[in-house]
Length: 371
Image (cartoon, rainbow, N blue to C red; front, side, top):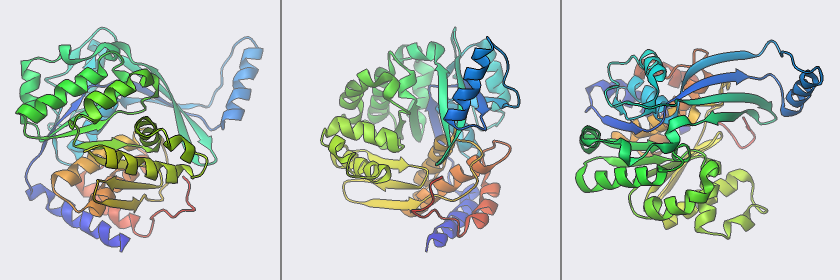
C-alpha cells in the first residue's frame, strides 16, 4: 500500500506541467554555508582538537569542506523552483552575498528583484558528525544583519508580491533575533486581510531565541495567522511544552519519537494551524480531526543539513495541488530523500523525482531503522 503512494506521486508529477502555476514568497534568510564533513564521532574530534592545541596550534588535514548556498528561505526557493513553482525570495545579504545568490539561484523561476542589501551577511559553518544514529550537524552561526531584519525592511513592492502569492512562507524565526515575531505577525496579518494565499511557518530551532518564544506563541501561533506550521521533532516538543507544561513529564515515559508525536497532537489540539511534522524516521500531519503518518525512506544519508528545506518544498507543492495527505507526505519525504542522498547536493527536478520514486519502492523505514 505504501508503494501505491509512490505511484500516485509519480502520476501527479507527470501531469504537473499541465497543472496551474503557483507563486510562492519565501523570507527572510540567505546564509553563506560551509559544510565541514567530519569522519569523527564527537569524542574522536575532541581528542584530535586537544592534540592540536597541545602542540600550540596546527592543522587537521583530510577534512572535506564545501561552500554552498544556505538559509531555509533560499534552500526552499531552490527546491520549489526545481519542481516548477515561481518563487520570490525576500531575503537579506551583503553585496558579495547578492552576487553569490545570483550564482546559486540561476533558475528563471526565481526572482531576485526583492533581495535586501544589508551590511553584514549571514554565515554558517556546519560541522557534520558521525553518531550511532547516523549523521548529525552542529551549526556555528553568525546571523549578521538578519538579527535586525523585520517589518521595517519591507516596502510597498514587497507587500504587493506578498498579496498576490499563493503561499507566503516565513522561516528561521530564531535568526531574526530582534524582530522575528513582528515580521511573522505583520506579514501573515497582511496575507489574512489583503492577500489570497496560505501562510506557512517554519521557525527552525527556536532555542537560540527561546526567551521570545512565548511572545511568538501568543502573537502568531495562537492568533490564527498560520495555516501550516512545519516543524521537526525538537521544535514540536519545544512548542508543545510551552502550551502544556505536563509535556515535560512525558519525556521520562516515552521515546523521543513518541514524544514528538504527542507534541504534534497537542499543537494540533490547541492551535488552528495544520501541524506538519518531519523527522528522520517519518512525517505526519495533524489537525483537530485527522492525523496521517507516513514512514520516511531508507536511503544513504550524504548530508545532514537542508533536508527540512527540501521537505518543505515538496510539502508545499503537494498542498498546492490538493494531494491526499499520505500522498503529499510521501512527495515531501521523496523530495527530502533525493536531496540528502544526492552526491551533487542538488534538489530534484520533476523528471528526476519521477525516476527516483521507482528506486524508493520497498525502501520505507521501519521502527528498527534509526538513520
